[in-house]
Amino acid sequence: MNTTAMFITNIIILIVKTFLTNIIKNSGYIALFSGRKTLLIQDICFLHNISPFMPHISYPNNLYKLSHLSINADKKCYSIYTLKRPLNRMVRDIIYRLFEQPIRIGKNVVPLLQYIVESYIITIMNHAYIFTMSDKRDTLLPSDIENVLKTDFIWSYISRTTLKD
Image 1: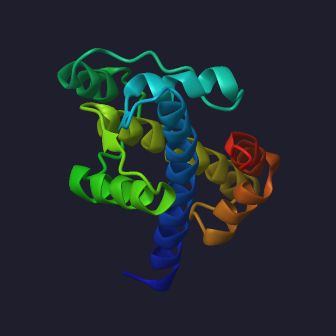
Image 2 (image 1 turned 180 degrees about the vertical axis):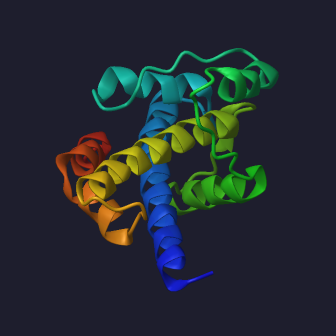
């Protein structure tokens, strides 16, 4: 793998960690405030009421329907198909770092987070491709992703979803 691809991969990993940290932190506070020690799908969906940048999530009751929706939702839909174990490990690591109390993870929370993160990364890549097209190039460069990150699109989301301690 060349250095440009490695750099783009590292940028995407950093974006995913930041995005997941914000979602898990805020939804974990919601779970703890509710008196539960388990992070549920409802906690993540409640973030839509708090943050205008969090998309409204209508979730199915079981995992099969969620995977079926994410794969066959639209012919023009893209899916990254992130591996489940590394994402699960990342989510558990973030929870361990953020909270002093052990918080358990509900049954379908990780697949829902995976779906949200994949759609978020796809949105970022689509915006980066617009920068690529405006420069009349065919190759996505790290500078295109950095330009997207410099816009208010990302940073306003990150700053507004972080609850003040």
